[in-house]
Length: 230
Image 1 (tube, rainbow, N blue to C red):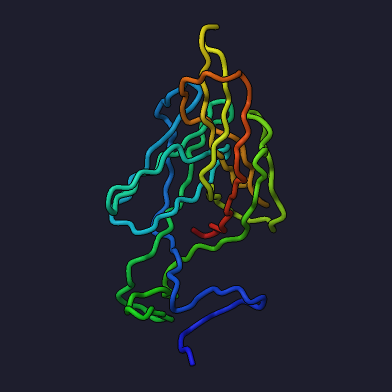
Image 2 (image 1 turned 30 degrees about the horizontal axis):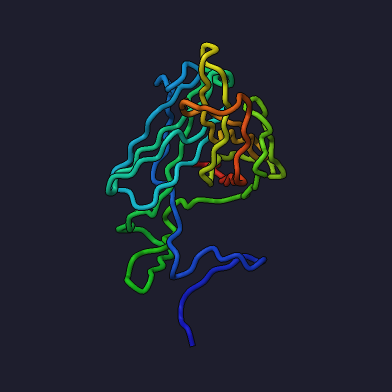
């Protein structure tokens, strides 16, 4: 007989068990996207987190924002968040960092540990609350100016996470003599009932092919989390 601990919902979804560590809110803040990117039409900002294990950054903004880059060196993680000027306004981006939390040293509540004695759940933490996981076909959005709204959630306060690494491209002519390819990633904007997705540029590269928009070759995925009270 196998022993352990498990908490499930009425529909059988596992919320807590003794083998999987839930991600909790570590910190949150706001970030101004003021650094000029590889093209004049984008702005980005940088977040650096030290001593992290498996960090995830959720985004809450009033325009589509994507991951320009995520770099890891040991336990130091650097996230660059990027947006295009055509959609931006003066409102800074709010971000939420979720990761495996350190053990709490005091307080009443429920604590669950794994077989190695590491804490996987503590009722004193504020854990990530996923509300939806959306899938976008490879050809969605249809071009670099299109926005797609995905809804169906009850009204709430949400943040969004681009949950896959995929690229689209916009090839264009440079000075009528050569072509370049603009690399695009998913930008996400949390809405009151879901999320809005649009392509965001991250860099330009020399390109020898035809001018035009090139769809992603794989589907896209976006996770929406509830950050009410966070």
